Image (cartoon, rainbow, N blue to C red; front, side, top):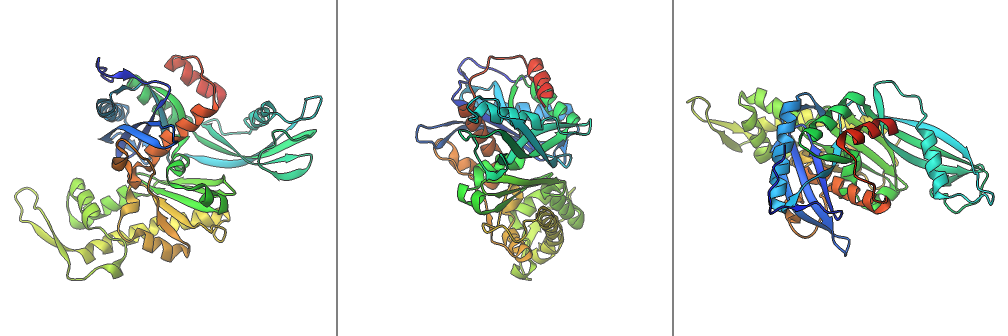
Length: 413
């Protein structure tokens, strides 16, 4: 259970907490939006994550302990007693499919209202799903009114019949249940459950990039998450379970060292492009169990790293091709997540994709913003921004118990 102390004030409606439960780390980010619209970071807490594998909870107790540690640290630094969180979800169990929904406009004057749009999207929930999948997001691709397509916002228009093409994003029921259980055990309520690449897009993509066409690639510790945007809308998502942890494991095995050393070496000396390495550059590795220190060449390290990075990027390229967007991304590819800061990864990606590539850094100002201006915090910052947007859109709901909220989630989806 999260400790509460007298000097910590309650989490008011203006404060949003993003909880990024990843394969290698858990991050809790406390923030609020200033009147200027800028994000003001109040506190941040991080903890090593040992209870997940490829984005999915595999050990409840270890995951609960990691969440509790990150939340406690965030509470101490922000002075806020955290009660509600917006949580990210990932894993190769995530699925996306297209469906169509249609309704008749019932208003006597035939004017389409926001309630009609909500009813249309509710109709999309009737899509046939495997029994082990639950809906996370319904993302309208376009609206069609009386046969007129290409409509992005039908509210206020006149019509008799309205249709929508909708992208339905689903997750494994048990993966969702286990996330809820872990967060419950720490005494928190989940306000929103968000697909991680969608959350990251809030933090690192500009509206203009989403409009002209861009692919966001979030390479974390356990998963690589992809979201393709065009005309301001998410058009395609994919997740696969090869990411930064596999690079670390390759280094560990290749050099015969422990995981902590391999991770540190990757961050300090790692490079993804062999041609950029001077062949006489070396670095020391402390000996284990009384053994003598070793000297390893950076060229050898790159020979270990580059093939795995190429494999990850080739999977990304295959997904972009599968989505039909290989030649439709004027804004190119934005890399984010902790692995995005591996030296040379943008150069290698640009060479492979034949597209513009840049590293995406989260944008926040004020408070502890400088601490989160790193790709590894893209999801946490994006979760906060998502939560703030939902809070602006939705009226305040009465407080419900955690059991009621979990029950409502599965009834709704």
